[in-house]
Length: 241
Image (tube, rainbow, N blue to C red; front, side, top):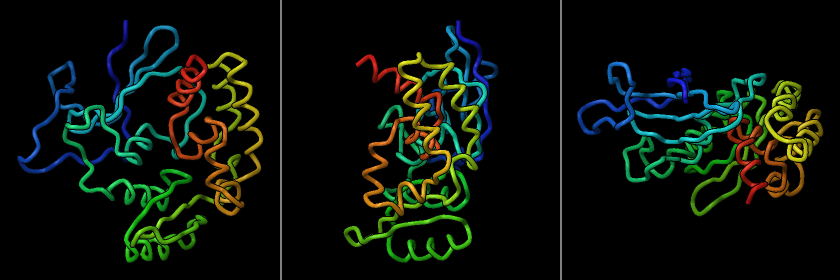
């Protein structure tokens, strides 16, 4: 039997709408019926955890994965894949994404303010130029190119993975969450990245984005600031398909 939902506060949670234009969604706290808003987790049997991100009562993501209790990082959040990709459990429900560039603007800000270590976004030229000016002194390295009247930017931090993350804790968690035949290739990939940075590996190197697309799933997820528990669940599911 699953435990009760526990809220995990995260400043990435989008603000709720103001005014009367949007009615709240169906996700409510069992005690009192208050509207759920944020990241919620509950324990499941067999060392699993269920996670849902909720905006104003509407679920934007809902998944389960293995418990990985050792690793944590301010660069990693269940909100990162949601807000970077504009996810929603029900595409027809209300969402915080106001326009087609909302996610791009969110990624741009998340990179500037240390909410994720690597990402790509597309903005109008004037906004991209303002982003370039703000990025000075942040340790970000970027590559920019025109894209149909807009500017596409791929950016990442110059800090090494071993400085950004507790790789030992993450490796121990992967070994505890996955069978050896699945865990060890991911462990080897993570260990190989310790002395590199997202900028050096996937921006400054030739064909960096193509290299990133071929990287181990554990590395791609970590580099994007996605939760390893969700990544581990994807690795396990891919092995069964």
